[in-house]
Every structure is written in structure tokens, then in C-alpha cells.
Image (cartoon, rainbow, N blue to C red):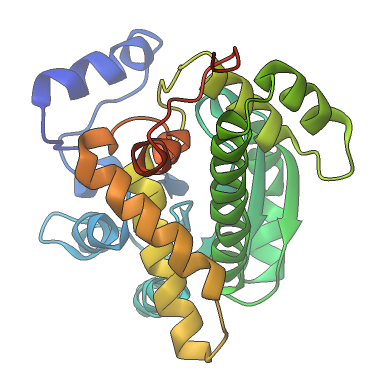
Length: 275
């Protein structure tokens, strides 16, 4: 499909074309004569263009095909897709994922899915090739909702990690020992361990971009507001995400959230304690 950089797009698909995959110029071309259409896009606006656009999926997809949206979007977006596909006789699942670059490369994602149960069972073997677990959430929109619930927890974990490491740095603690405790104590999590270690190494190479976490925070805020569900801690995290993006770290890993707090605290979190 057409992407901002045609050269980059061609390089990205070249390994697949060498193995016999058909490369399409538009989403409309991509869905022609296939049984299953799967896509994972950056935001609701991208879904709008790829699915509903003039050369989008809906302009070509036909009865009997199955569509799966693996993007992180509002549940309302998934429901709009489901309604549009239904008019074409197409079954639709929303199936967002947890995991980032490495889990995707290793086919170890954690996949959520919602929609017609019979269709879910039909495509489950395909999903199992992409993820280490697959979880069914019932009616369309529920998987998209669960993805936002999970990303709320992720955002708050990242905020807690950043605040904790900055406080530990200011207190003069040995941060390597701090992370040893974080790996074994009752608040441990793989997310804290991996991101904490990378922060100490000042490694902010992108697995999940900071700007995308900020985008998701905006989706969570809108979703929670519609349900009148309180999210006071998210507002704190979102403010720091906005500050970090404004400082120019939006394309770095989401752990670069800590840089906004470091600036405010006047420290830089490293693997060795301050003198």
C-alpha cells in the first residue's frame, strides 16, 4: 500500500516479495482474491484511510471474505468497521495485541479477539501462529476495549517506573541494586524489569514509540470519559508524556517518558549512583 516513503515501503516488503508474496500498491489491490484480510495500523485516522478511503479495503472486499483489525483504536471505531463490513457480507473481528517489536518478530504476541464466535474459531489457528496466547472477548468492540484497559495499566507502570527511578537517583541509591529488588519483589513485572534495565543503560531504542503511548493515552481518556470511569492517575502520566514529546523524544521508546521527570528533577538516571 502507499506509505509516506515509497522507498522505505519497498524495502520493508522486499523480503516477502522474494518469498513469493504479492506486493500491492493500494489497500484495495491488497484485498483482491484473498480469504483473510489482516491489518495493524498506527491510529484511528489510518484505519479511516485504509478501510474507508477511496482506494480502501471496503472498495474491493466482497462477501465471504474475513477482515481482522489488529490496531489499537477506540471500540467505536471497531464497531463502525463491523457495521460497514456487514453491509458487504464480510465477517469482522477486532483483534489488537499486546507486545512490541521483539514479541512480533518472535511470534510471541498476546492477542485479543472479539466478534462472531464461529469466525473466531475459524481464524484462531492463524492467530495462534502470531501469538503465544489468544483470548476471546465476545462481541465486537470488546477486544478494542480490553486493549485500552491494558494500555492504561502499561502507561501507569511506565509512569511509576520513571518516578521511582528518579526518586532513587535523587536519594543516592545504587540503581543496579534498585533494579535487582524490582526484579524479585512483589511489585515485579517483565515490563518494569526490561525498561528499567534499558533506562540505566540509557538505551531508548524504540520498541513502542513514546508518541504512540501518548496517542493511546488520548484514546483511553476519551473512552473512559464516555463511560464516566475515573482515571486520575492517567492524567498525571499523560502530562509527562506530553512533556517528553514536546522535548523531542516522541520517536524514542516509551521509557523516554522518564526524561521529562529527569529535566524537572535536574538529574539523569544512570546505572551508578550520583557522587
